Amino acid sequence: MDGVVRTRVGYAGGTTSDPTYRRIGDHMETIQIDYDPEKITYRDLLNVFLDSHDASWQSPVRQYASAIFTHDVQQEEAARAIISQWESTTGRKNATFFVPYAGFTLAEDYHQKYSLRSAKELLREFEAVYPDGRDFVNSTAAARVNGYLSGYGNLESFARERDGLGMPEEKLLALENFIRAYGGKY
Image (tube, rainbow, N blue to C red; front, side, top):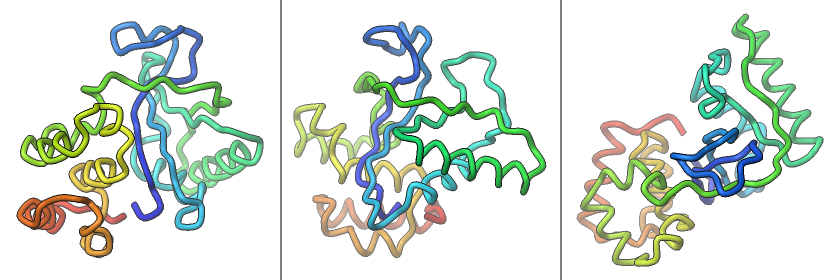
């Protein structure tokens, strides 16, 4: 999405020190989104969150619970207002938790950029540029390509940023064809 700079998956909302997928404790799996508020608003991100899953679904385990981690009072108020509007529009009851942000632990490398990791040829290109896994996880270009491969983004946004992704032309053409066939509305 335009304005999203980076995404990383991990764990938050619990008290277990150094959570992992195998030892998550009372944390929830979540995504951390770094964004440019000049290009996309917090409310826009909340609307995408609601478009992307069923906020009325109640997970039987905390690990998969729906949650919004708020950094301040303004974010919590905005989140509650968006959820309230969603309830009014859909007639469904919200099951999403509002949790004050208290930290984020990155998930293991194999969880990061999952769709890109499944596209082996494109992944090799990124591994050549980012031999250190931390740099790959923090890469804006990797996050953008992962988003396209996950069905987000459209040809218009791809055309604007294709040259900044640092990929050979033949890989860019393959990604463009993928977006043409499977791209999303964002």
